[in-house]
Amino acid sequence: MKNRVFIIVIIVIFLVGIAGSVLVWTAPAKSHIRVVSNDTIVYTADLNTAQDTTFDVRFEDHVNTIEIRDHQIRVISADCPDRTCVHMGWLKSASMPIVCLPHKLVVEFTDDTQEIDAVTR
Figure 1: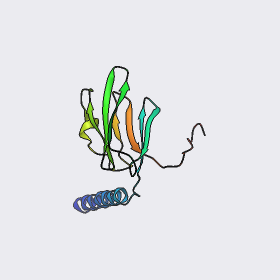
Figure 2 (figure 1 turned 90 degrees about the vertical axis):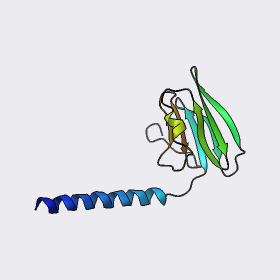
Figure 3 (figure 1 turned 135 degrees about the vertical axis):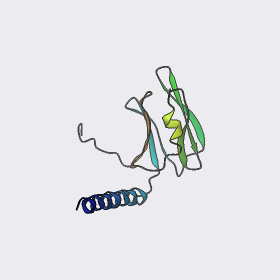
């Protein structure tokens, strides 16, 4: 009896994982990105039309260098201790933004229409 319950729980977890993966992979492709530093939008672009470029985003005495190349975006260098944002690579999915917590930086896909914030409207 115990083994049967255990197998059913494992199968349910496996199916939920597959369903979640399918949702992420089938999400509509977005091309509009925004770079937010300390709750302020510092850069927006449409990756389909953006020129290849590199730019710095400064927060206090810290710098993140962001690269746009071949219609993709990534953080190529950061002076934070763990450099997690650099290791995340190219931004691939709207469900997984590039985040640098020490520098309060977020690189994310966004809709091209202005969103209404649920709190401030």
